[in-house]
Amino acid sequence: MHTFDNVSYLVNGLYIIAFALFIYGLMGLTGPKTAVRGNLIAATGMVIAVIATLISVRHTSNWILIIAGLVVGVVLGVPPAKFTKMTAMPQLVAAFNGVGGGTVALIAWSEFINSRGFSHFDEQPTVHIVIGSLFAAIIGSVSFWGSLIAFGKLQEILPGRPIGIGKWQQPLNLLLLLGAVAAAVVIGVGATKDGVSQLWMIAVLVLAAALGLMVVLPIGGADMPVVISLLNALTGLSAAAAGLALNNTAMIVAGMIVGASGSILTNLMAKAMNRSIPAIVAGGFGGGGAVVTGSGEQKQAKATSAADAAIQMAYANQVIVVPGYGMAVAQAQHAVKEMASLLEAKGVEVKYAIHPVAGRMPGHMNVLLAEAEVPYDALKEMDDINGEFARTDVALVIGANDVTNPAAREDKSSPIYGMPVLNVDQARSVIVLKRSMNSGFAGIDNPLFYAEDTSMLFGDAKKSVAAVTEELKAL
Image 1 (cartoon, rainbow, N blue to C red):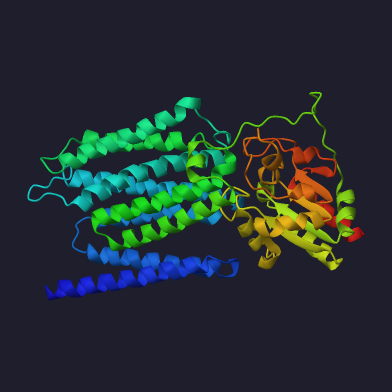
Image 2: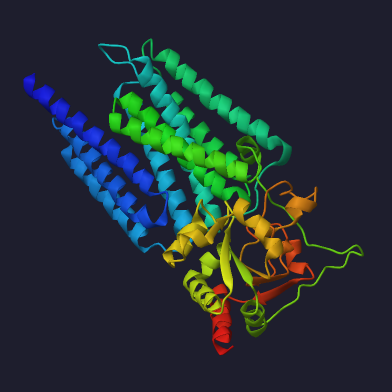
């Protein structure tokens, strides 16, 4: 008994160290200069937590399975994390988050099987085991399958536009939720008797899986950063619930940290879009059409050249760069930094306008520009920069469609009406870098592209910025 107590103290002590490292590492993620260090600190905490857990189960006979699982996890996890391009990072985040949710659902199912339907031969299961496992099963399954849909949309395997069944969408989602909860109640009641059939647990997982699919499919591309954050929070909460069921302190604390931080981020992003989380879950943006004149004729955009763009910016007092997913796809951040340095050498003030949902995941543009060593104080959040556009000579928009759409302010019939956007159209001149006139990820056309003071520089963003840079060197 004395040896057991000493081991328990050791395990709890290691867990406390791990939790402290989690929190300290999370604090480091608040800025690009400390983000790498913060990530390493948190990873060190996770290694310590895993070691503590292995010590706590030292008497198990399943070491071969445990080692095999660790090896498989490393083999499957390290290559994507190491070799995935920054442009595909949102997809990777969605995939990893989904794996976490799926793992929690499988743990809940395994706990159900091992405890023979939560009913042991010699004792009844405690309430926290039953409720924790069932909650983890539902939320984990929703997160896994929802994340798969998010991955498919981000990878463009699935259309970015909303995919739904119209007015029947929400009643169907409600029925699926009620069905999963009802099956869970049947399991909970049966757990206090002689156990229940495994079919009820399978029903919980299947209904929750269908709910995850049907909730995310109708959500459009403009809402995808919020969806990723929400799914991440759900995975954290499901992990915490599974930790309660397994009496694993590491899962409880780590899950609550992820769930709390993800929930806060989701709420902040939803407020920044002037939308509620229930409204986003109820169905996202999408479905815009072509911009037409009063006579029904389609408007024409004005094309420009790299030379003209360079002249406009070289003689400007202030240029605001508005990055979007187009910059990420072309990996143009380093070219943008070089161009900005040339402009600053000519006495032009350069700032970067960052919309909360620009790109495909929270902070996507911040990460890209930090990678190019753009000074962090040059990155301006939407509320701080919107008042600057009216005093700006040139706004350079690099593949940012939906977050610069003035229809969100002016057109009550627009699907994105009410969403705060960057006031790019108030600049004296706007230059938009795009491959084509195709609409953005939300599937909504942008009247900014046809405005009188807007010109379009077509082509790959990286090549276009490089061409502008060469013209600047010649001036």
